[in-house]
Amino acid sequence: MSATLVTGIGELVTNVTPDGMPGGRLAAIAGAALVIEGEHVAWAGPADRAPAADTVIDAEGRAVLPGFVDSHAHLVFAGERSAEFTARMAGQGYAAGGIRTTVAATRAATDDELRAGIGRLAREMLRQGTTTFECKSGYGLTVKDEARSLALASEVTPEVTYLGAHVVPAEYADDPAGYVDLVCGQMLDACAPHARWVDVFCERGAFDGDSARAILAAGASKGLLARVHANQLGPGPGVTVAVEAGAASADHCTFLTDADVAALASSGTVATLLPGAEFGTRQPYPDARRLLAAGATVALATDCNPGSSFTSSMPFCIAIAVRDMHMTPAEAVWAATAGGARALRRDDVGYLAPGARADLVILDAPSHAYLAYRPGIPLVHAVMTSGLVAWRGR
Ligand SMILES: [Zn+2]
Image 1 (cartoon, rainbow, N blue to C red):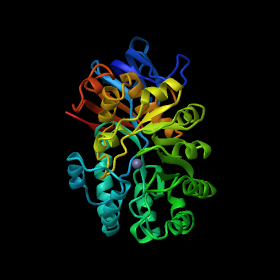
Image 2: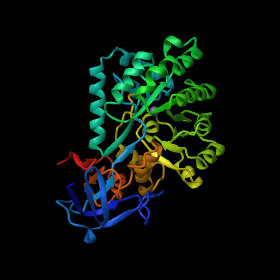
Image 3: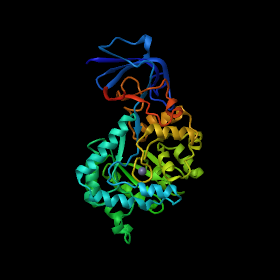
Image 4: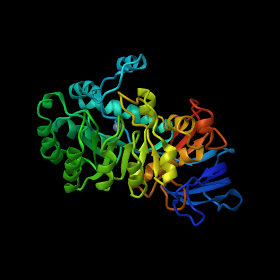
């Protein structure tokens, strides 16, 4: 197997402890090098101790980070909602029902139209350093349209999430219980073969705690692992339901009680914060410091979707997390890499050490702090996925 040496790394973010295990905080080596063999990292350490390799890449002092892991994205949809965004910025409130606009457009779209949209967003993500991303259904809301949404998502990522329980569609407005039965029955049967995860929007105006429990349990019976949209628009049972179900992640976590924070901190459920949604809806940001102080594991993700958070940029989310949520650059970058990996229960990404997948971002900057220090600047110089250059800038 041929080996590639990436040397001249100004700062190598490894996210591993001194004994080489993925750790709970950002860790980095100055003046570093990295050896890639095949799809994996074979060696990482100080450049002056690097072994020889067949090919040498000089990073010329740039920072190298694990590729971003975006654990929450809704990429399967048609249409756009810029008018709704504009109205919101002029003072109109945000409610879960706006999702139905996208549902109508998505049902009317062809497979190829949906596939083109997914591909466009996946390329955007790659150019901004995202090397692993999750993708949900949730804009079909019929058996056929949910199943095809998941089949299309599975063409671009293994992290596919069944979100039939995104919102109750208009045709079930008078029979929400009937829709929950569909989500737990015939729709699940059609969707489970395409998905790894099941998710539910547990929120006033979407699904209550009992419905959410039923949906996650039904998903589990088909082998789907749980994740939950929890406590985005107000206090509610979402976090409780997520922790009870052993969910990998409770996402949003904007309105939490002390009991919610304690439950997250004492569980294996990651608190995934989605600051793009608060940015796009002008809601208060989640209290990251409170979660971190309690010892909860915090991830950052984009929530890329056409309604509340139409950004695919992890660097943008990092910048907001630092500026407005008071995370340090180290905390935010860890949350966007290793945190995302934990939210997807992945042990092969989010860190750079022997055995990790060789997914890495090379920044046109000497340190990870520049992701927040230079907001809005396209700092990604190149991206490697599974040991190969997948995107290169100037
Ligand atoms: Zn979402």
